[in-house]
Image 1 (tube, rainbow, N blue to C red):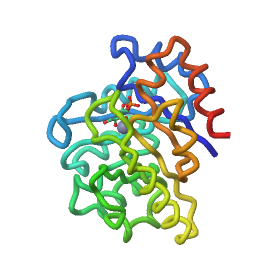
Image 2 (image 1 turned 45 degrees about the horizontal axis):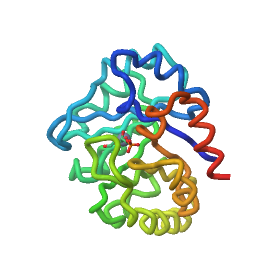
Image 3 (image 1 turned 60 degrees about the horizontal axis):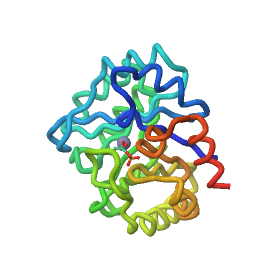
Image 4 (image 1 turned 90 degrees about the vertical axis):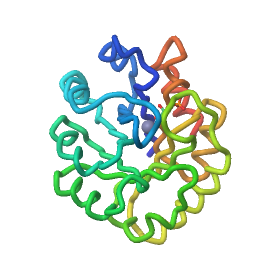
Amino acid sequence: MIRIAPSILSADFARLGEDIDRCTGADLIHVDVMDGHFVPNITIGPPVVASLKKHTSVPLDVHLMIANPQQYVEAFAAAGADIITLHAESDVHLHRAIHQVKALGRQVGVSLNPATPLCMIEEVLPDLDMVLIMSVNPGFGGQKFIDASLDKIRRLRAMISATGKDISIEVDGGVTMDNIAQIHRAGADTFVAGSAIFSTPDYGHTINALRQQCR
Ligand code: DX5
Ligand code: ZN
């Protein structure tokens, strides 16, 4: 299954609802939460997620790029996050944080920065619904895809196969019409795209075209 997740980081924040409505065919809405500590940028918090939840039936894929995620997981779950992804680098008690999300009945993902090795999640991999491979250094949209991510995705796909579980690989950062097929072949199934969608006039058409590249 291929999932396309438009990242609202590249949307017009004064017209979020309208921009999401224009994302016809989106499988998930990717919501980038940044705190100015874990990453050098500040975006949005639970109130915006709650408003989005009221506005759309598309599942919300909430990517937490924040310090102390355990402090905020409950608020994001209450706001209506369907998938909550934490960064492995942001919590030394990652196992506890993962199980906090699961106990709230939400799907859980763990994200790895470009410099973080896959072995960081070896022990918790069977507990996860999704692994999010950052293919740029998080903080900003519109950056260039780091090519070394492809081999990391291939190795992660092999690790997941060894668990025998159905765990998604999401890729975030620099995904475009030109590289999505290659990323898919490496083993990813869920694709975040910000600038590649919101810089085009017809978001629905672009989402469909991105999906077609993976066939
Ligand atoms: C980066 C964010 C991404 C970002 C991707 O820190 O996590 O979700 O919006 O934007 P593009 O697709 O433009 O690289
Ligand atoms: Zn993201």
